[in-house]
Amino acid sequence: MIKQPLLLQLDGIGGIKRKMDKFMDSRWFLRGFALLLAVLMFATANDDQASSNNTSSQNDVETIESVPVDVIYDQDTLVATGVPTTVDVTIEGPRQVVQQAKAVRDFRVFLNLSDLSIGRHQVALQHEGLSSRLRVTLSHPVADIYIDERVTEEFRVDPEFNNAIIPDGYELDALSVNPQTVEITGAKNVIESIRYVRASIDLNDPIDEEATVESQVQVLDQNLDKLSVSVDPPAVEVTISVTQPSKEVALVANQTGTIAEGLEVASLTLNDDAVTIYGQADALAEIDEIPVTFDLTGIEQSGSRIEVPIPLPDGVSRLSQQTASAIVIFNEVEEAANPDSNEQSVGEQAPSSNEGDQASNPDPDSDTIVDSTEEEQTLSGLPVEVRGVSDDLRTAFIEPPSGELDLRVTGEQAELAEISEEDVSLYVDMTDLDEGEHELEVQIDGPANVTYILSQPSIRIELAKV
Image 1 (cartoon, rainbow, N blue to C red):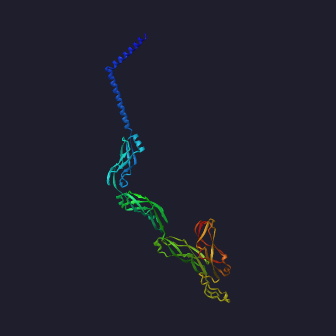
Image 2 (tube, rainbow, N blue to C red):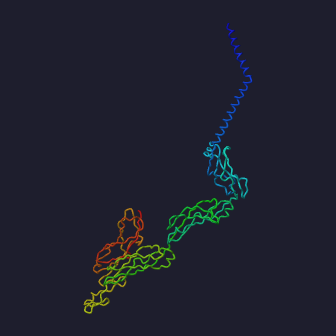
Image 3 (spheres, one colour):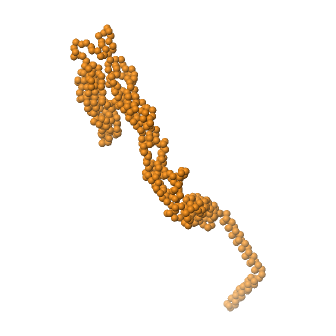
C-alpha cells in the first residue's frame, strides 16, 4: 500500500525531466539563449569603454621645479663644467600617479659621464624612479658638458677697499688679509684663466682707527667674470687701519685790544707754546706755527690768566687742544711830568732825603717786571691735593709725575713777608669723575691781596679702579 504512491511520484518527476530535455533540444530555445548571450556581451563592452573614457578624463599634468641633477663620473681626477645644477620635471598621467610622484619625489635626474673622455660632449639627461604610466619632460633634456683634468693651485689673496670708508684728514696705514693665500680647485682650463683673487671690505660707515671684517674670496678672469671653482678657505679676514697725519707746531701769542691807562704789558706768556695738528700730510707740511690773538681789553690785574680758542688752519681737521691760555703781566707807567709839579717820568730818580726809602731795582733773574712797591717770591714744590675722589678709585699723576708745582707770589713786601708754604695750598676737584684720564685746572687757597702765578695752570691725573 505504501510503495504504490512513491512509484507514482517518481514517474511524475521523470516525465518533467523528459519534457525539459525536449524543450532545451528545440531550435527556439537555442536561438533565445544565443540572443541573451549577445545582449550580455554588448553591455559588458559598453561598460569597459565607459570605464576607459572615465579614466582618460582623470589624467593630470604637474611640473616639479628645481630637481637636483646628479653627475656620475670620477670627481677625484676630473672636473665637469656646464652641468645644470637643477632642472624642472613635467609629468603627465593618471592623476593619482602624478600626485603621488610629486608628493614623494622618490625619483632622480642624472648625467652619466663615466664613460666619457676629456673634452666637450653633449649628454642627454636621464631620470629613474618614475612610473612607466607617466610621460616625463625635462626643461633641459641635453647638457653641453666639458670634461677636464682636476687641478689644485695656491693663489695669493689681494685685499680691496672703497676709499669712501676713509674719513677726510685720514690716510691708509695698513691693509692685510689672513690667511694670505688660498687653495683653488677646478678644471685645468679654468684655473689657467684665473687673473684676480680678491677679498673686499664691505663697510657702510667710515672708520677712524681699525676694522676687521670677514670677506668671501672672489675668483675672476680677465673680464672680471666670476669663475666656477672651489676655494679653500672660502672666506678670509681683512684688516684695515687708518691714521691721521700729525705735526707739532708752535703757538705764537699776539695781543690786541685797549690797555687800561697807566698800564703797559710787561709779558704775555703762553702756558703751552706748542700744539699738535692733524690733517692731510700735504697741508701740514705748509704749517709751522699758529698765531693766537689775546684781547686784553678790560684786563687790569697783573698775573691774570686769559684763555682763547686756537684758530683752525686750512687743511687741519683737528687740534690736540682747542684753547690756549696765557698769563699777562702789567707794569704801571707814570704819566709824563708836569713842569709845575714835582712828579718825574718813569726812569728818573725821585729826590729823597732818605736813600733807604728809594725803590730797589727788579730782580734781574725774574721774568716779570714788577712795580717798585711790589716784590716777588717763589714757593717751590707745592703738592697738589686731590679732592672729591670716590673711595673705589685711586689717583696717579701723569703731568707732572711728581704732583708738585711751583708758585710765584707777587705783592707788597709786607704781605709777602707773612706768607709761607704752610699758608698756601693747591688742589683739584675730581668730584663725580669716572675712571680714565682727566685734565683739571689747579685751584689756589691762600692769602688775598697778592697775585699767584702757577708754573702750569692745569695737571693731568688718571683715575683707576682700586
